[in-house]
Length: 327
Length: 228
Image: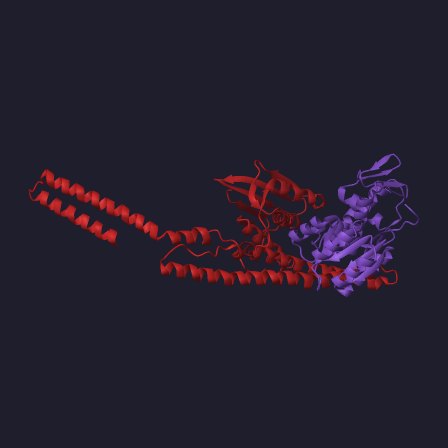
């Protein structure tokens, strides 16, 4: 406000001077000195004003840079008071701290729930697993009963997989995984391809690997990135046509590295694509899966700041591109 | 071998003990940390299987206490938490291995055998059967001087079936063994069947293989009596 007033005064002065010149009044050297002095004073006032505003807003900048911008997990939030005497900013800081404390309690509750659910759900599943194992191998179990037990074991496996995937999703969302490794995407891809070599061979899928340069994720979690790439490549093999093609292409788009996984399968449905791309969308079960695998891919990608682009053409195949942020 | 199972869930401890007793282990069970502590004070064990989630004791404290009193014993941690930190903490304290729930009893047994081999330096795990010789260290199967050309998965399946010969192994157990975390695909059963079909074909080129049986609706069994 002060600044604009001064600028307005300065503008008015210049305008009067111009009117004067136009009216035949030519300023004397002394007038020029006054004008120059006024300009210097105005410039100084502008600089002082800028510095003062900068000084006044310092606590707000600290609030943004030291507290809000770096926040990943509320348990690491900096609750220290702001070095300011301005009541409004102190109150703002206090309210943000209170909000983060509440968020932290919710995070801790969720962590406790995940640990509790892990123990309370996985223990009975293990008991049933082990009981089925013992009954199936018991020579006194009639073969017809053993066959039904094997079927029950298969159902139990599905339940166990769903529970484990949901727990894993909760742990990622809750930042219970650390990202402290430098991960080479080329190495992970080669690892996955080796682990899936028999499936590739049995389905007679030909693999094209076009990896000119490695992609390094500087702050990553190897286990999670393996899960994400394994799920993507496994889907590309599983839903590929027999004697189909799987292409893995690394490229550079500006400074951004990308990895495209392309198959020659039937293509993804609109629902599947939405599950893969949209946060918080409940997975929709299809005849071939429950969609949690796609959510897991999306969540791991988001955890690592990796963008996902899907191009799918019915009957021709799907291409999923991972867009890695420059490190 | 003496085994102490420390597990607060009675039915789980019972299933583990039933299985291990069939495999000629002598098993004791403790349902609380207090019971385990008392048993460890009085008896000595070859193996301690310890569930970290005990109601009255911190699992890590109990592990530390047990290792301090019985240093030659092998310790295997059982945990419901898949968190890497817990696994690393247990291994750093001196545990030999860990298993995450849910696990199969065959997997538990395999881990115990592996720990035993490692600790006691058993270096000749070669298995001779029906004229064939399987060498796990060189990952090679031979018949006389001829080498049977097996893929990695075919070798793993044959090795696992031989380790648990005369016992029916379900397709699920086979899939879990050879694919581990990748075994959640429902089409695994088909892959196992294809691998076994190929394995049969390759072995039958050298000798009759009527000892490799398909147990309808359940899985596979190798029927071989006598020491291998």
